Image (cartoon, rainbow, N blue to C red; front, side, top):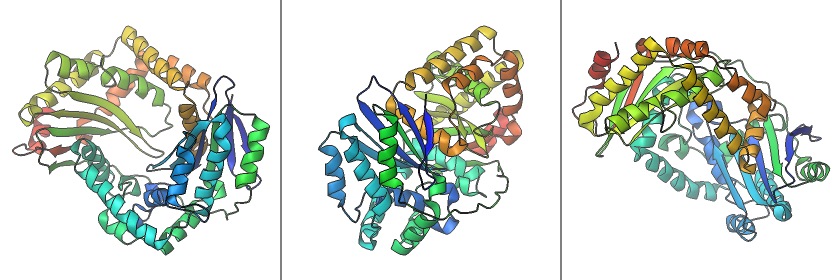
Length: 421
């Protein structure tokens, strides 16, 4: 059972003792991502994540890396549209080193102009890397297009133009405004004693004081239907189909998880069996729910030889129509519920996954969703719940399509309008 505490400066702490492991996973979560950025500073949150590893008042970038490598520990970070996470994993006897290194990075990073200039090239190469990978690009292109009027649609990495304008002053100012006591959560899972851990965290972070910030009320996010193709010099064409869907904490979230498992979430799913196994038209095809605080998309992805695009889309349409017409049997729904719960419970046996689940949930929901609540939510799903999804989500008037790769000679507008009617 996770314990929720608070440091003297207001930082929330989630601790979960697991006495039968010998490692500790430790994460610092900040409620800041690309969605918080003004357009002219797009990419600054991800830039800050990089700069945390470039040296502090006490350590060089090399010393940060060596301190963790010497004890066989892991240290990493990632930025999403809605939050940033810095995390470590070490043996319990090496936790003090991880705490010292990560707290030093978090509280004492230099954000030196010379380091910022060097890292700009690294991030530019990262932007190029994603741009050269159509299987990655096609998903980002979808979100950029359907949410083009909102910051949720902006790329996490930023653009060459926006990151070229960032300097030490802008980064420090943004960091000071968005890294604060009231929007930071610390999550620790593994082999430790709760009282001792809280004391260590208080010593490391209790002196960090920031001013609370009042948030402005966000306007509703507008979905804009799109059909867009980006040509790339590749053999395959990568295609995403998207329908507007539910936000992260919508009451239907468990039903969507079960439905996605049936429709395109694995090797036994409808799409995989029909398009790949029965017809051999793709190597990769799947569906997933991309859900955020205020919006969501139900996505279908497939990669194929360009001359097979039309047939793949026809088969996807056929399967959608089959489900809409005849529904999904109770037996299949029950099997999918077992898959969802098994995957969830098995993933929870990892200290990293437990730390991630606890920290993320506390940050974005201000509470921990218990295992019992999730199990109950999934087990309660009925045939009617699944039917409600299929009746509402597959609205072809709102279907968006993005493609990247060998798109030559394919008129996606015409093809989409002729098939999905």
